Length: 261
Image (tube, rainbow, N blue to C red):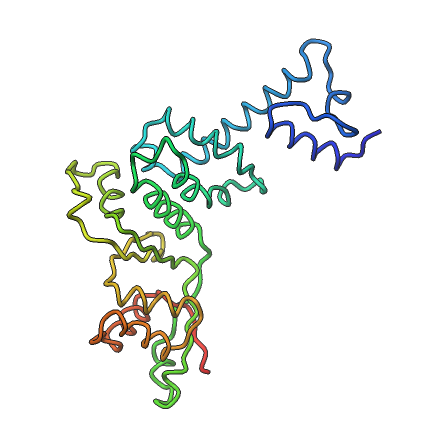
C-alpha cells in the first residue's frame, strides 16, 4: 500500500499537471472508478482548485482584473497557477510572483504598466495584513548622544513597503477604485513614481515620495545606518534635508524600533 505522504504528493502533481502520473506512484489504483474515470475525477478536483485559487487572486488583484477584464484575468491566472502551484493553504501568502509572471506573459505585453500595477496591489495586500507593531518613542531618539546619531539603524514597520515605477501606477490604482472619477493618464507625460505603502491603524496608505527620500528609506529598510543612508540620498539630491525626513518618517510610523551602532 502506498503511504499517505506519497498519495498526497501524487495528488498535488496530478492536479497541477491535469494528467495521472505514471510510474511506481500513481493515483489511479487509489481512485474509485465505478461511476467516473480516474482522470475524470482528477479533472474535477483540478478545475475546482484552479477556480478557488483564481477567486483568491481576484481579491488580491482587483485593479488588475478591472484593467484586463475578468475573462483575460482568469485565463492568465490559469497559466500562472500551472507554473506556480500554491505551497501553503493560506491564500494570503499566494501570488507574490504574479507581477514577474505578467512581465514575461506575452498576451499582456500591450499593457507595459500592468506588472507594476500588480506589484503595487501585492504590496497593498501585504501591508494590509501585516501584523501590528509599535512605533518609535521619539523621546528616546531625541536622547541619543549626537556623536552616536549617524550610527543609528532603524527597524521598519512590518507594513512598510517601497516601490519604484517608471509608470504612474498610484494614479492608475486610484482611478480604478470604486467611486473614483474617470480620467485619462498620459503614460509618456507622467513622471516616474517613488512610493511607500504602509498601514496606519486600519487604513493602508500609498504615499508618494521624492527620489532622494525613497533612496534614503530604501537604505534604512535594508539595514544600513543613518550615515550610509544619508550618503546614498545625497547622491540623488545634494540638498537632501535629513532632519526633515527623519522627523517625517519617525513621527509618521514608518519605523518601529532602533538600535545604536
